[in-house]
Amino acid sequence: MIILGVDPGLAHTGWGVIEAVNHRYRPVSYGVIRTQAKDDRQKRIIHIAQSVASIAETYHAQVVSMEDIFFAKNVSSALLVAKVIGAMMMQLHTINLEVRLFTPLEIKMAVSGLGNAQKEQVQEMVKLLLHLESRPKPDHAADALAAAITCAAKGPAGSSKLH
Image (tube, rainbow, N blue to C red; front, side, top):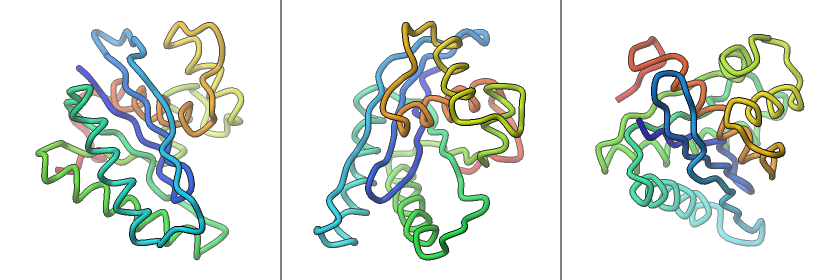
């Protein structure tokens, strides 16, 4: 199964594509979609949503796994990320892709086995699970790959499933 993982953000949205077969994972590609603060917010959100859909189509993703907002200290930035998530979900729905949302805790647990794992621990596990020579950079791409691994580890069914 080809899974596109996404770490949503307005300035930087990480993405990572993996192939998952029998709980073995192979990295396909990863990167970051960047937007400029000087640009119109609405255009930035639309650009991100369209770019994620384009990546999904390019790599023939069968499902999209996305980090959801679970808790936010900064309410205004959380609202912006929520708008990005909503726009991506709508865009992905138009191309008939299933979107599964996972909390940061679920991702940490699935990838490292520790709900309180530090970012570096999760990145190290992503490196090991994908047989990479080093931790994926930038961090947003590593987080997106972790989201994809989480979806693969949880399997096709689950309470996080949205369609």
